[in-house]
Length: 430
Length: 116
Image (cartoon, rainbow over all chains, first blue to last red; front, top):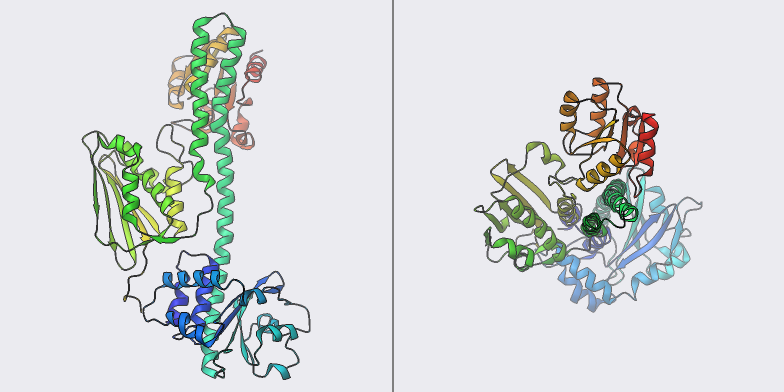
């Protein structure tokens, strides 16, 4: 159970904080290693900083809320939800005492707890009071004599340290606990490292996307401005030409409208940061989108068939963004389809823990040459398209650990498949 | 009368350039895409070409290369909303680079300069 939970953190769409908390939970829950408390330090430059401390305050608390986590088959999402609730309840206690603690990783002599992270070795403190290298403030905070320091690292990169103890049960630490805890530390370290690299890459991608956006916006704004400027100059130069004045004012009005459209269509880029995923029901979101005024108007000439499987599990993401993504795809489908054609929306289970949403049309289809570029920002197959719709859809799917696939044939139509992670169904998880 | 060929996919701008440059005393022909340009050049001769860069059909930069291969003697002005292409060495082949703005003064003066 323990290792399977930790290995899942690599694939879950939650933030690193949420996932680290799950790892701490796994180390402290009854069916895991079974330590009473887990403390997390993370490195920031050359120092180790206290960040999170998870554990029951008393034996009673350990028996009540902590035991929930030992329930066989408990899902990842349930643990996350449990942790979020727990943290908001105990914001005052453990972590608050840990946060002021900061230890240098490169200044000798190294004290405990910094030693384990700096040397990338597990340190087992058996009798803290007789151990001179233990930092006195740390001893006051932890308040026990025996604990385990597990470094979190990947290769040469030190990412943090976990400190585990049995403050409640006073059960002595055993050799087998150490083996398992070190293995968890190794996995958690690799997870943190992968996340760090991923974030760096995402930042770089974001910068590149911003550069591209700036260039695109410039172009989108300069053309209408050139027209507005030129036709305004004509108004000044020929104040008495009534026909020309009317025509120019019409053109100017239209170009101003275009400027407004550009601003409106750029809205998805303001949502560069996706919100935290929650689990929610997909069918009501689909219904809301289908009832939107834009879609309703188009539905009159092109029917939309809807087929949603009963009792779908909840999916992970943000309902508003998922709804907007669907609306984008439906808009495209309806636009590509001529009168007499069909558009369909289907949702159902797909393997274990996935829900699939398909949007299919019998429209003009996409040429092979554009398929690779389809989700690029500012790429559009429409004459006046801005190329932000599908880019946004892809971002929503990526942000919540899902994926999107497209199948299309010229003259026959296009099918988009959206794969959402679903909340685990009870009793299916090991 | 000097003959100008304007390649511009924005309809409003085509109209504006045609009116304003005709008023300056040029014979102005406008086309909306790069495909039409080569066809046009096969039929008629022009004294100067003004072209945008990113347009439907062939890319404007490619177009310039092709025109140069065809008739090296026609001066070409790149007139575009993209400032950044100025650094693209492919555009150095053009005789002038004008970034579109709310005033036509720069374009007019570059045309005059190249035709004098």
